[in-house]
Length: 325
Image 1 (tube, one colour):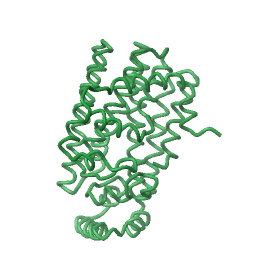
Image 2 (cartoon, one colour):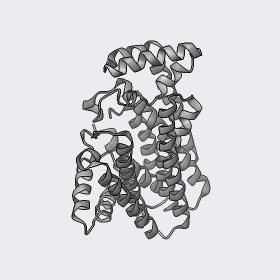
Image 3 (cartoon, helix red, strand yellow):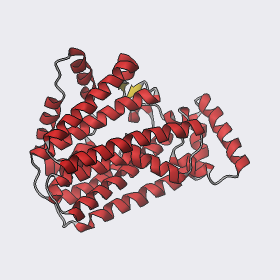
Image 4 (cartoon, helix red, strand yellow):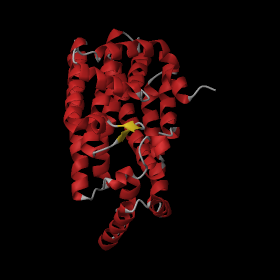
């Protein structure tokens, strides 16, 4: 049986090859060190989830075209750039099971490579000759930066409520999913109802994607994730399972609980932390939220007639629910 990702890709199989060619050609540089680092980055391919969403969003609205391929390419370039910058900010040694760019080439060069990729994404956007697309990208850049700063603020303050958490992950993660769907849609239709529906679908899917990552941080393993489970805990980043538990407690109970988790984290006692979070209902609550948000995403697609593309977008929700990394 085909994997879910292969099933999702069936309606856009030929276009994925065109996207890949566009992506590869967009990254060429006359500077050898740039080509070396970029080759290292793209060698360990990710799921290409955002370009797939972009292509499917165009397909469900009409016909995929050259502008769609350009847009899908710039979205993946932008995604890779954000990962490089994230690794610098988070002081991360691993990315997708490999040493991160910042570990191999140090922070200064990593930041410059991330900036180079951002500039490439902008260059690609200019090729679409779409003012609306430029506006979407500008809003996306603002939200991505804001989300990253909110996360840093959370680490500094060592506290966050659920409303602030969702605002943070909406900007930091969901914004790129939403933009991927919206940008794909505008390359093949001017129907604002469809464009808005896909933008909202992507936003909800992005939230669900980050919540799934939060579960991985508690339940996952380095073989699945490419980084150790408990990574966010070690970085003092509060994820949804912990936020739910903490915010149910009194002021004194919160302090005691945080000290306990911090001590266990320092000694890498993640099995003990996992047991505490499970026993206090953090995992059950988070899994329930994941299902709720996934259903909201699927509801956004009700404006579309049944098609292979619609089926593939719905399967992308299932893919997120079932993915192992």
